[in-house]
Image 1 (cartoon, rainbow, N blue to C red):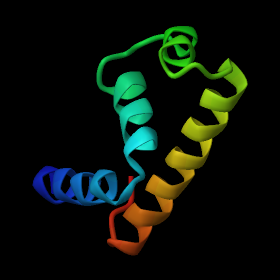
Image 2 (image 1 turned 90 degrees about the vertical axis):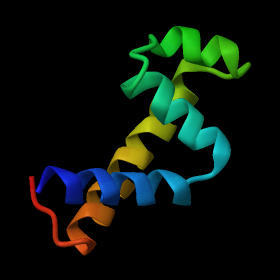
Image 3 (image 1 turned 135 degrees about the vertical axis):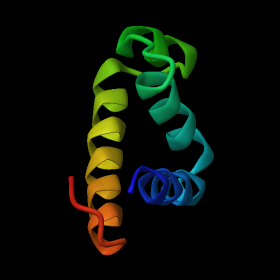
Image 4 (image 1 turned 120 degrees about the vertical axis):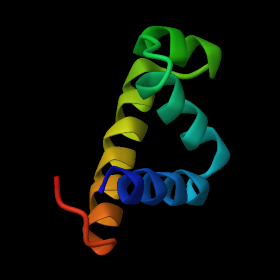
Length: 70
């Protein structure tokens, strides 16, 4: 099960735009604060939060399509 989830998440991450993938990884892999991510990308915290919200939603849809329920 966990290997299937890992593969599904990996496929999802590869499908993202580069910037969105980097932002997602910075937040959820490296646990960077949103403020730091926004500063690094010369963006607002609101924009980063929206990107993360949409990406999480897309990830959920992707996992459902892959037949993975959490």
